[in-house]
Image (cartoon, rainbow, N blue to C red; front, side, top):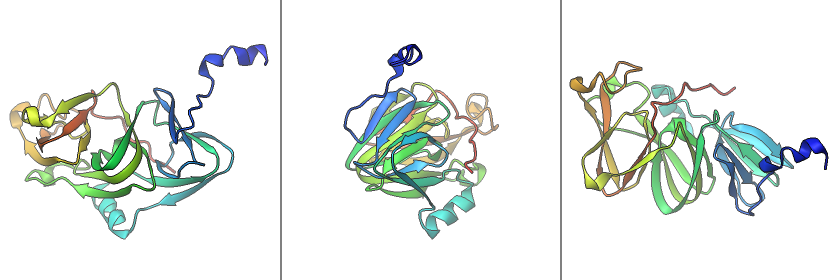
Length: 225
């Protein structure tokens, strides 16, 4: 091994034999010999071996929802026998395993999920729906398999059942299937919530479950080519 290569041994590839392996807090490796995935378009930073990519729209219904709401999530299917390395603007990456359950993700935070998992785009209901652009539709994942999501900073996990819970639409990045949502407007909170957009709209969460909130209203979305 050369002296130059020796200098970077602390960054050597991590092998676990699992389908999803974090190489560090901001880079995920997917073993495609063990699975196939739907991944965020533009998230590929490297791959080794045989990897096939195919862009997916998710069906006419999902395409219409995305067109109507400005939903920015575009997905590609990756399959083959190689290794795929993905990331999202050097954001923190978290992996979760679904076991015949449902989770909802903010589309801006979806990184990848196994193709065995069913997905759809769902609307958050509420009287303030017409006032909020882009934050009403999220991605619902159901079934069993691995999911990867990205966060802008270290998130906090809130127990929805313990108290009435509200969050900025761009800061709430994931919540469990037993949680229901509704939109709420609060003029008094305008100076604290949605400062980037000037909106005072929150998502309210109720039920038995949790919501994951990041310490950010999100980064500008870079359109995938």
